[in-house]
Picture 1 (cartoon, helix red, strand yellow):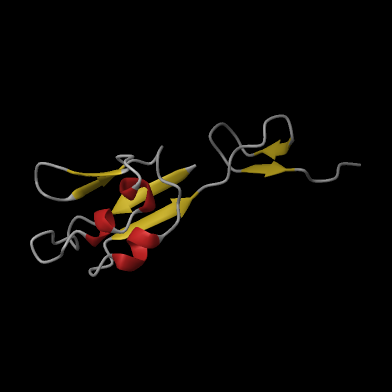
Picture 2: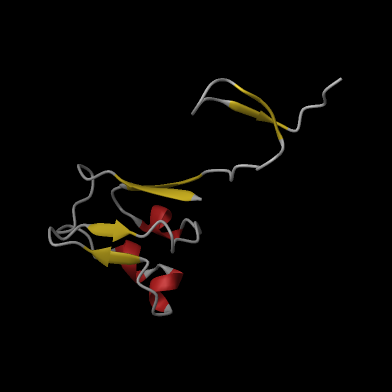
Length: 94
C-alpha cells in the first residue's frame, strides 16, 4: 500500500512543464495514474501508483513524496497495544 503526498504549497504548475505526468511510466502506457485537477495541480491515484519514484525525482519543486506502507500480516500478530495501536508480528513466544 502506498500513500502519495503532494505538498500543495510547493507545487507550482505554472512554473513547471508537468514533469510528473510526462515521465510517469503508467501515464505513458495509457493508465491515468496522475491527472490534473481543476486548479492545475496533479492528483496521484494511490491505487494505480507503482511507487517507482520517477515523479518524485522529476518534480523541480520537490513537492511529491510517495510513502510505502507494509501490509498487515493477518494471523501472525504476537501482541497488540490496544485497538488501532502498535502491533508486533512474528516474535517467538515461549
